[in-house]
Image (cartoon, rainbow, N blue to C red; front, side):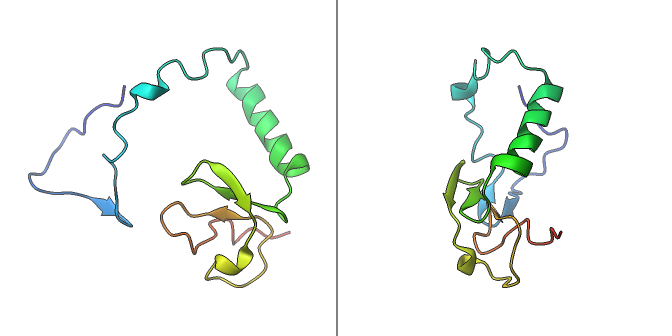
Length: 104
């Protein structure tokens, strides 16, 4: 369970790119998610890194965090026009590739 903030300022709402941190407080649907997973955190991290480094095709796909899915890579949508090696769409600003600074 996520603890409530220790300090609350009356009538203050913090938003980032139009999203309120409380917009997604209903997490009841996540109860039990992943219970059948028997892998350790170390194994999951190693498998994730292997997938990203070896198997994932960033020329064809873009990671869309906001929608929790892959999208076809459309690198023209991003405001920074240098060729990216990896495409991860910013969940708050869809014209920003958060992986734009990665280089060889």
